[in-house]
Length: 225
Image (cartoon, rainbow, N blue to C red):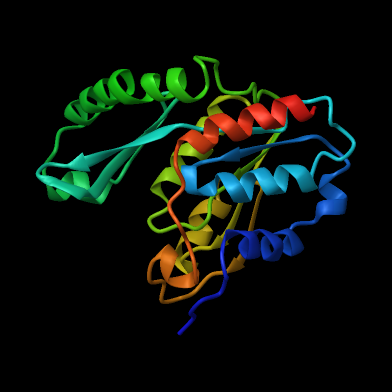
């Protein structure tokens, strides 16, 4: 069984960087989007390895999302809504709990108004997500468990009219690869265990990442350009 593939996020970044065709990707500008707070160190690191020729452009951002849980179970994700109001629903769970689609959308809209808009105001000073239209976009996370959040972010990227969308994660379940391949241009990963455990199982150290890092690191990126 795979265990401790990475010492920490920095190690995961370096190993993932070796998988990416950096020379080829550096021929065009890319926008690197972190899809979770814990993905920020890896995504920001990749943004520094890409776009070497395009330092006058904004190359890094964070896509805010929020989960919608099943009734009476805060650990069971029923759906994900993104800051572009795109939603991905776990249809099997919806049917299992006999939840109406209208109820999910109502809860999603409430979640957007209550949580996501507050996140944008607090951590991005109310500014919108970077314009992705006709751009190459790389969506990054530290790993995937259910892939629901990543699928929602892919949907957002496509709805924003991207030129291309690719996914980069250090580790993910083997079963999720085909689902992502079907709706993206490329997927890059270091390891895809057939018998996936949880993301933190494959890291020796994986400390929590405070949302405040999003605010600090995006400001640093803009100042450096």
